[in-house]
Length: 218
Ligand code: TIU
Image 1 (cartoon, rainbow, N blue to C red):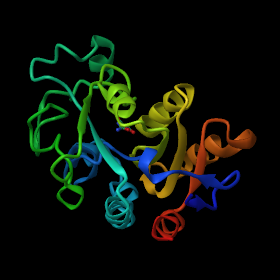
Image 2: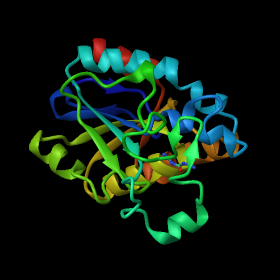
Image 3: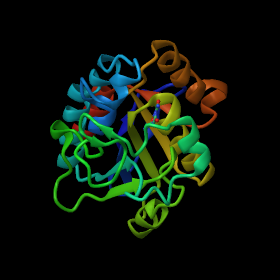
């Protein structure tokens, strides 16, 4: 069984029951000139994940891992966007540089070209930060007998954390890949990763992508 050197200890996984989860690698969050940058964020903090994630995706596909992508966003009429979210994110649904911000079907809502899903890879549209809330993710994982998740994407302390915390509660073993998750805030990236593996791996493990790729190629 592939085993990865991880924090707080070795992470072993069976490829046939492991999914590689790619969270919200969307143009609205990652493209220069996009929504994320318009809020004053430095998208370079997220874009540094693209290259390692491209390599990890290739290795995951070659090893036969199930690949699942997610996108955060809402219906065009915003009927699935809680008023409380809209109050603190009044730009959601407004016309942005890449179409209506975080609206399904818009150019900015879709996944960046470098990490385009391949045919047959599920793309889970989610209205919230977590990938389980109001989605079919749990059914998709159950139907394929998935027990372990290798988790990547953005942002570390928001959508990645929410998803991993719930996945852990649901009984999945989660390995978060530190160079394949990104935060606009270096401090949150550092502390967000520490939180996962602290206390003996309170809700997961943390490793870097070269260690996972090496384990997949063993
Ligand atoms: N995908 C995700 O993390 N959505 C966010 O809104 N993240 C922020 O950090 N804003």
